[in-house]
Image (cartoon, rainbow, N blue to C red; front, side):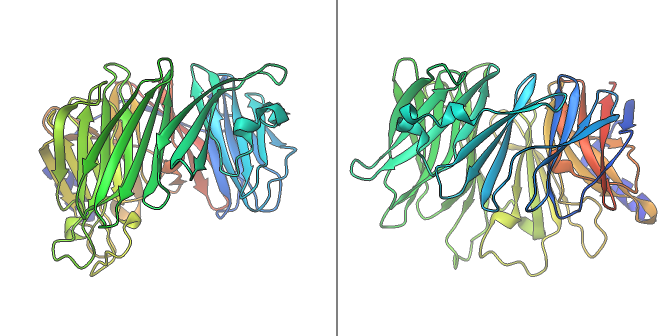
Length: 445
């Protein structure tokens, strides 16, 4: 009976598409405690790496080859302090593990190739001659631009109320790095730096501000690193607060899409979060006027997912978990999906309430990615006899369409670690008890 009820719900909001698919599982698994941190780097010269960070120990890299055979397991010769932040940046033939010890100026870079060979290249960021940018106690941002490593460092200068941002193209240790810098207005009493994006010869800075009267402003700054030209655009929203704002850049037309949760002050009788969206051209003029979608967590929704009919830049997602002080009468469990037209207006929506203990579609874990110019949302669905399945959702011409992924129902899948590979397939880790392996899915249509 549950299976028929689920099928009925799905038919209400989407068309179900039969899809030819090939699913492969790794030949060999690794033992990883469920509480440990794990990261995935897919397709490094044909290899796939599961990087395991056990507490108070050295990182361990499990190397799978292109046929998903477990080739080797390697312990990296680096000690991670308990108070460290770790980030991974992927390139075509290797990736960089960046380690920063919090509240210190200690920065480490480890270069790891597809076959698991590692090399400490920290010297390229620790030279005394580079003190203009490398003495920061704040973590660096690392970017892959045309398969070259770029570093972005920020420092606040209170006397002039500005943030200095250094953009560094890192090379070999014996070479002098290329350094560019820009200054952006910033007052630490009122401003918060939300997102910084480095593109080829361009830097996008997104910040929020709250003045003494508690009026909220979202500001986008765009720097041309070749000419020094600076553009800015502000969006004032009174007492409403911007939560988790972000930008997406389109290389095709140099357009910029901005979106954010928008909340009203607590105590307001209409304090229901909405979503702010707008699209700008390369001059930061509006292509689409500001659109505010109201009440996106209605009916006890836990997660909201939005996609555009005519764009392939991917889904955007918002979780009720990021909202502080917005109580629900019961624990949020529902899922709200929305399809937008080219004016950023609602074209289609669907609400899955998930009442009680039975979840038709789980609000998390989830993943979203782009494969072959199609924006996919990957979710866990509940099947008959307490079995769980995997569901791909993507925008159709007038509604949502779905593909059931016929994965083994006894596995749990770390959807947040999913990585698409060269528009051919995607890789996602699975767990079974204390063991972890990889699943490869190829969609043939």
